[in-house]
Image (tube, rainbow, N blue to C red; front, side, top):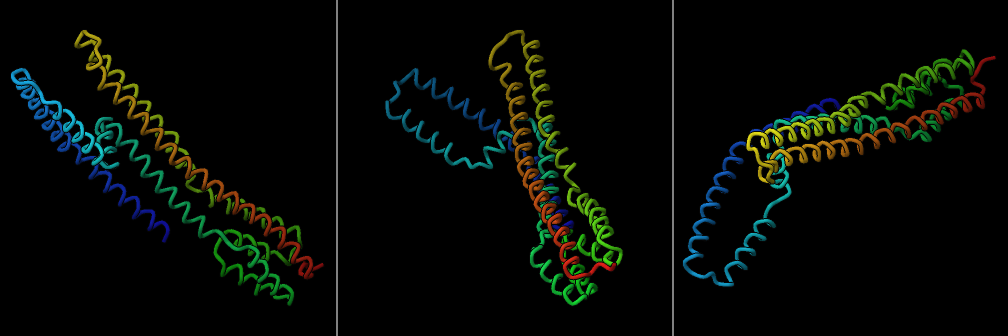
Length: 284
């Protein structure tokens, strides 16, 4: 079920991101037309200003309207603008890293929440059965309980007839298996954490190359010539670092969650051996 939920999240994020990317070209053209019209209006205004003096109230009104327009822009529109300015060809790879990384994080979080077990209550139920010598009943309790802790205790109870050493060996062996299952998928999250800044730095290098190509073509070092390339360089780096930071936070949370589950597993395994010894389960 959790794999199905993670798959649906991946598909939903992928569809929304693809619509977001492919919607950039018309918006960019519309912005270009608006900038052209604004330039024409500014030219006309400048010509009119040469003929008649400007009243002192008009600049104040224009400043107020510009501030109102800036306030009306939502965070999504600002993010969309920076995504376009950063060149979607590079930004799309960073976005894919974010989507896939979050999908793996969500899947791990769901899995670990399911794997979390109340070990104290589980051990109490096992102790109740072992007091009457009902090992099979204790095994049924472990089998009906979800989580790696119950699975490890079940393997220990299976080897109760062979003595405490066999129980400890079975717990340690099966515990390593459960540990691998808990850490499954972390390598992909760490991969996306490493790749996202690299993609941003690659966009930085390519943006700087474009800036120098424009300087060479124009033959003049002016801010307007190199601004575009430098902007691409900076935006790709920023977005790559943001993606890495977001995934790193989730990664640390998942690792901390795994450590907590492993500690409970170890405590429960030690407690199980003590309970079995106190109830004379081990056969001499």
